[in-house]
Image 1 (cartoon, rainbow, N blue to C red):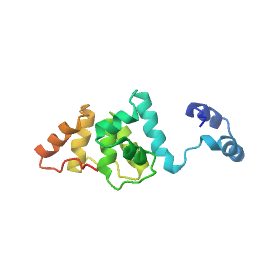
Image 2 (image 1 turned 45 degrees about the horizontal axis):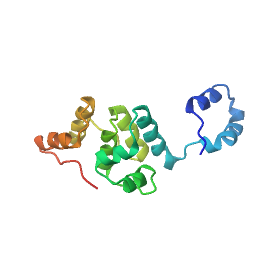
Image 3 (image 1 turned 180 degrees about the horizontal axis):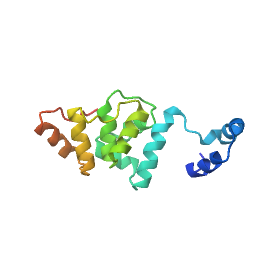
Length: 149
């Protein structure tokens, strides 16, 4: 699929009047993110910026490539928030990037008043992206390890 850069679309929107929106949507329909693909596009964009391949993220997150791909493209929807957290950590996401990914997937953002989330936030902010190290941090504080799916 042909892809138009977001900044090109941003430039178009800068000069569009409200009565021109229908034309914008019609002309750029194939470039618009649908809700199901928004998470996938976001993951890809962040990982591309970091030069990290999705297949490596699946591997570091401990999921098979076929299952991880179904989750990321939302062909299959998980109710396991930990899985999305694991994918974000494996992709070296920042706290803001992780929150945005969680939100796009339909989960709550990391919450400082939640003990487990506080561990994730501290790990991410200190660039601790090894899931075993994070599990150890969780255990040290009497918290449940990241679930495996």
